[in-house]
Image (cartoon, rainbow, N blue to C red; front, side, top):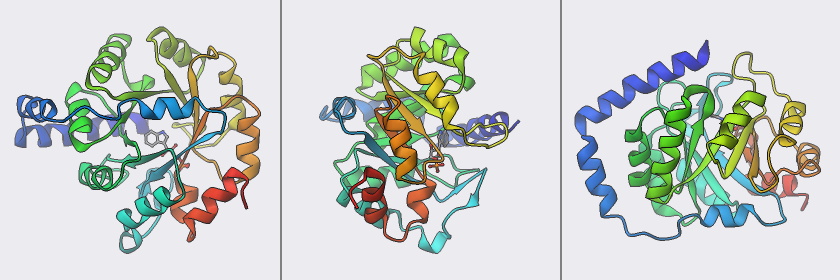
Length: 262
Ligand SMILES: O=P(O)(O)OC[C@@H](O)[C@@H](O)c1c[nH]c2ccccc12
């Protein structure tokens, strides 16, 4: 199964980085970061307009190369997202399947005051400290790849570091686990990671299982204004959009179109 391959690759890549920089030296770097702007993303998500998280992603296991490496000018893409006024920028940092890197996240976070999300398969506290050092304000924790103990432990660590967490769930059982772990933000991936099909109905059904005071994000496969209207009508606070924006030549126009401001 693809998720196992992703977790294995993530583990190997992390071990290589940890040989170059120990957990202790990462922790020292974290201590030197001035605290500012923490949790501003959560406050925005709570407002009446649907929030947009725009993703920077050049490749994925389901789509292969989405934009050619020559066209992957991530600083320009980040500027477009900023000019369109998105609420957060998600940056893929997984190296083997998504061709991302922590370097991209670091550059984007340094250039922007918009909150950035480290989009990766977090399986170790080391990766949470890395996210903080890179300048992220948000991390993703995927319920399917974590035990309850680890989910709880990583949520507390993120809180301690001033990082918001989107807890990703796919089915009823994972929603229950996310709620018991006291997630403040739950994200449902519309894409089934086993067969890559996209299904908004699953998201809409799962929304009803999440208490109203937990913020809810719908992730993946969002293409047009009709999709966004469907999600808005079903109590979604924010959407996470990657491929549609990455393929759009005029990203600002595309973002406004999804908002219904044409
Ligand atoms: O490009 P899309 O279909 O708009 O999807 C974006 C985002 O939801 C997707 O990249 C994603 C959702 N959850 C993930 C977990 C890991 C890696 C990637 C993802």
